Structure formats: structure tokens, C-alpha cells
Length: 192
Image 1 (tube, helix red, strand yellow):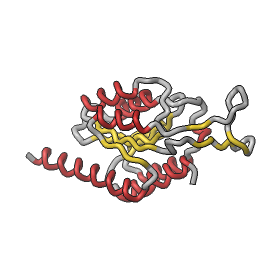
Image 2 (tube, helix red, strand yellow):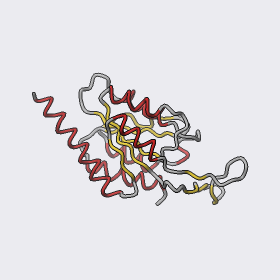
Image 3 (tube, helix red, strand yellow):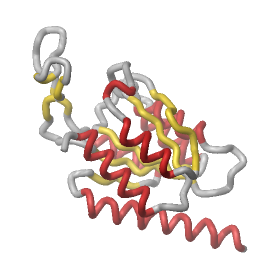
Image 4 (cartoon, one colour):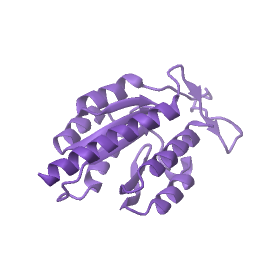
């Protein structure tokens, strides 16, 4: 599967492991969009995940900081429940505010789980319109590389977790365990 399909498969499996959690979705490239605000309707979440495509976000680029900011703004301010942002990206960031945003989310009690998508060696991006690979203005093939360093920094600055989508099943277990642990800690604190 291509990178987007891998991300969709991961999210679909993750939802089945967390059936009682509320979910919201944000798509981002050169701009961040909120196609689905927080909801307990996992069926709707799955529909949105399956419909995701490069056309869902018309502006090219990667604005991780903007996506993190929109994520934070999407949580109810008054809620005392634990909050997690699962950030799935290749980490090729074009706005350079991601680390600052990760720190801000930490201050708001929002954990970021950064998940790397793609290869550190880089790979070309398929272009459905031309049945070839995307080209830049000079006609060179555009190569996208996984920026693991940035994603590890985001997780470190936030106190969250970094994982790579190459090992889908192991990462699924790890992310589920972290979220379940936070859920348990949150209910213990609420009971006291």
C-alpha cells in the first residue's frame, strides 16, 4: 500500500481498539482542515478516513504546526478528560512552528503521538493525473523523505511518543497501550 493507505489501515485498526473514545480528524498539507470535529460516532470517523485522498487538501506543502494548533483548538476547553493528538506525517515541515506548538500542547495537557510515514531514503510521489510521479517546475521528480528527527523532537518536546508506521502491528499495540494507560490514570485521578 502507498503511504496514505498505510495511514488509513493504521487508523481503522486503532479505532477498533478504542471503541469508547471520541475521535476528530484533521487533514493537512499546505493548510490544515477539520473535516470531522470530535465525535463518538466511530462509523462516521471510518467513513471520513476511507474517503481521505490527496484531493482532500488542495494546498501543497506540509504545515505540522498549523495542524497541531487546529487540533488543540478542536478539544473542548472545559473538558478534564485526557487528550491525545495522533500526528501521522512524513515530517517534511514547511512552517517550522511544529516544535513550539508541541510545547504549547504539552502546557495544555495534550499528548502528541508522532507517527512517521514513509522512508528516510525518500520515495517519489505518484501522480494519478499523469500516471507518472509528481514533478517540480523544472521537471525533476519530487521525492518525499521521512524526517524522523523532527518527529522525534516533537514527541520529546511534548513528552509524547514517536513511532514509525513501518511496523504497523507493533506500533498499534504501543499506541493503544499508551492511550489505555492515560485513560486509566485519568479515571483514577477523577475518582479521587
